[in-house]
Image (cartoon, rainbow, N blue to C red; front, side):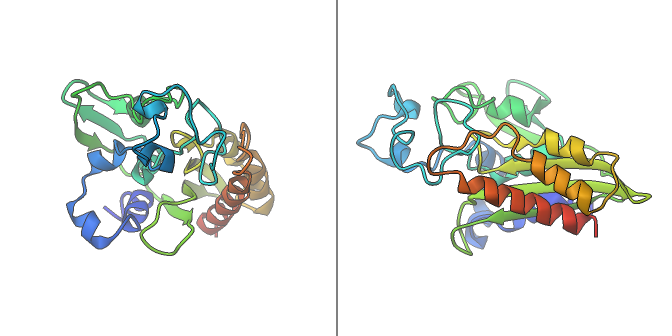
Amino acid sequence: LGAAYPGLTAAAAGLATPQIRHVATLGGNLAQRSRCWYYRDPQIACLKKGGSICPARGGNHLYGVAFDLGPCVAPHPSTLAAALMAYDATVTTNLRRRLTIDQVLGDGSDGSVDHALAPGEIIESVDLGLPVASERALYRRAISRSYAEWPLVEVVVRAVIADGAFKLVRIVAGGIAPVPIRLRAAESAAQSAAANAATIASAVAQSTLGARPLAMTGYKLDLLRGLVHDLLEKVSA
C-alpha cells in the first residue's frame, strides 16, 4: 500500500497513537465530529447542537479556519479525508455508491453538520483508483505538539515529474476550512511547468487564493505556504 499510495500511508502513519490506530476505522475518521471546544462544552448550544450562532466566531477561534466557507469556523478534523481527496477516492455507503470525498463531507456551507451523510447512512468501503506510475507523494503537518495531536495545518502533495516538468500535481490541505480543500490555483501554477524554484514559488503564492482568515487564524496561511513550499521542493528534488 505504501508503494502504491505513498501520500495516503504517510498521512495515516502519524495519526493519533498506535493504540487508537489499531482500533479506529477509516469510516470513523471520515465521519468524526468537530473537536471545537465550544461544541464539546455541554453548556453551550452551538450550530452543531441546535443553536443559532457559532460562538467560536466571536470568541476564541485560535485553531479555527483560515478559509471561512460557512457559519461554523471549526476546521474539519479528518486527516484521511484530505489524503483520500488527493487520491480521488470514492466512498460506498449502505445507501449510495461512488461518492467523492466532497460529496461525503459537503462544501462547508451547512454549519450544523460535520458531513453530508444522511441519518442512518454508514460508510461501508472506500475505493482508490489504480496507482500512478512514477508518482512521488508526501504528507506533512504543522502541529502544536509533536505527538498525538490534531494538526494546525496539513498538506498532501502528489506529483509526477518527467522531462524536468510537473506532469501531475495534486495539492490538498486540511485544518484550514470546514472541509479539506484542493488548492487548485496552486496546482494550475505548477501543472506542466518546469519543476524548479520559480514554479514552486508561483504555486506557493497561489496556495492561499480565496483565503478568508479569522482575526486569530492568519498565522495558518503562513503555515500553509511553508508546507506547500517544503513538499513541492521535496517531491521535485
